[in-house]
Length: 222
Picture 1 (spheres, helix red, strand yellow):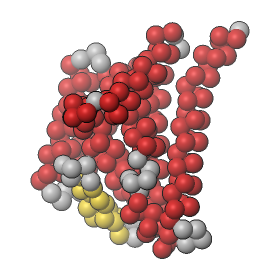
Picture 2 (cartoon, one colour):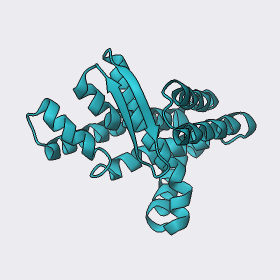
Picture 3 (cartoon, helix red, strand yellow):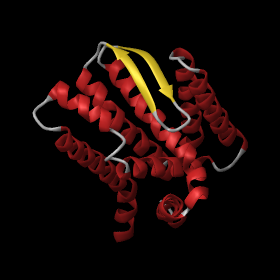
Picture 4 (cartoon, one colour):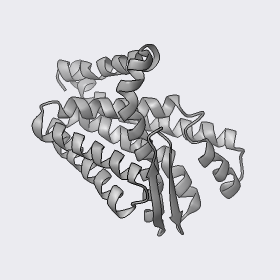
């Protein structure tokens, strides 16, 4: 990892923090696509959890206000519920890793993400609004991938913003999932599970950062 690549990560974090906490209405407008991205990854995590445990996805809805829901049939309820919060964190960390470490993968990653959004809007079609949001996102990502040189920077920012947004929003984002998780799994209250999920997300992110900066630290010491 060269010096430029190494310092892109903290610069992007700083940009996100400024927009999120000091940007006012302008910051909210710039980060609006990130909110929709987090919602999509969250709902896609539920859908993936259903599919991986033998269930079917009936609906996947993304609303313009940043809310959303996924309806599924069958599968393992505990994994499906956990898949929203943890799944979106894992996918966000994958985007972050590629954005920092794999420049040659950046274009393909954006294309894969765009294709995934477009496919979800078709096979799990439920509302025109969801389809328009996902298709607009897909077209934008395709354009960035094919017509600009900012594919790696965009991927990196989306990854960072997604992970930070998920961690910062843990008190609100998975609240309905946690209430259902308490009923399905039991053992602990929803509040305890909330902090357990947060701990898992933080550990996943720290492990990812270690993978990202590990090689640079080793070479620096050598």
